[in-house]
Image (cartoon, rainbow, N blue to C red; front, top):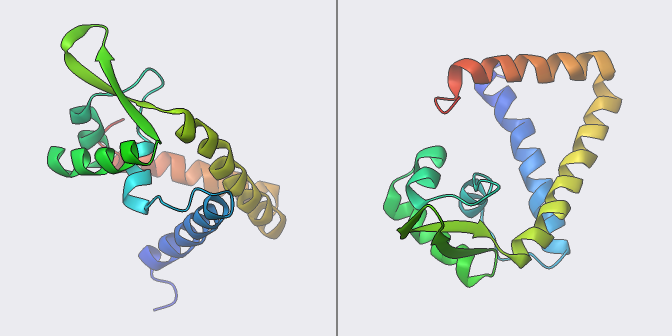
Length: 142
């Protein structure tokens, strides 16, 4: 069915993701996977505990640990002591991760400009508004 809502939501998401990964690979960040990025995107400004990342990404703590290990080996994240609890560790974005972020954001911005040119400002704003409102009832972390 061409008007199936799940497909209509998935196809643009997949296009955005493909373009972002192509830009990352073109800039030398060709060793990250979608699963790793889903964890990486959820790291808080001051770092996050592994349990927080697992919950935010809706994956098990073991899976989050595996993905963080991979990101750490790639130089995208680092584990540091939590200043509020010496027994705990925080995952923070490392230098290589900081360099990758603007590449991914630029690719997303380029796609958004193309979509705005195609849809027009008003429709693009309405699309964003509708998706933000849907997130209110679909994202349990809000």
